[in-house]
Length: 165
Image (cartoon, rainbow, N blue to C red; front, side, top):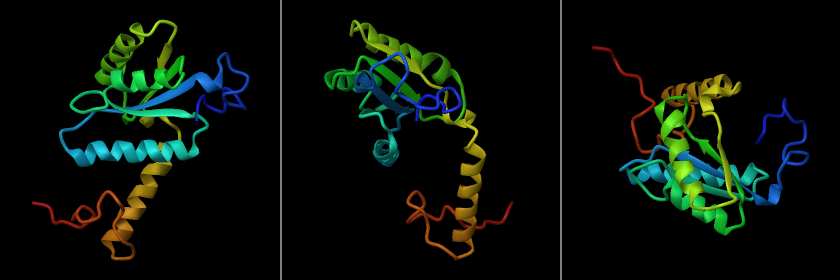
């Protein structure tokens, strides 16, 4: 949800924009592996279920479609004039600081009157520690035979104990 509730107790209402013209693009790196690219579509579908933002599009920074350019165009076609680009990345780096803002700026430059911002990546979120612990607990339970593999690991030998060298 945007912005952080500590900054605004009632997101999307008293802020300086029309919520109906707001869109979000969730962008990952992109992969040559179809399964990895499909995972972003699953993330976006789950985000759509809980977000008050009505226009939400997936994008890959490179290597796959939809690109940031394509996602930007889809948002504008649906009436967006303010686009929030959210990197589905864990930590800040070159892609967050340079590549994604550049690609978003190039897409926005083709659409007069459309503004955008790029949010911080996920790893800076205060809840990340809890998410990490939940994932560790889930994988430990699977390795101990107390639960089924999660969707990411199903059919793989990912959550299994291994002996070191």
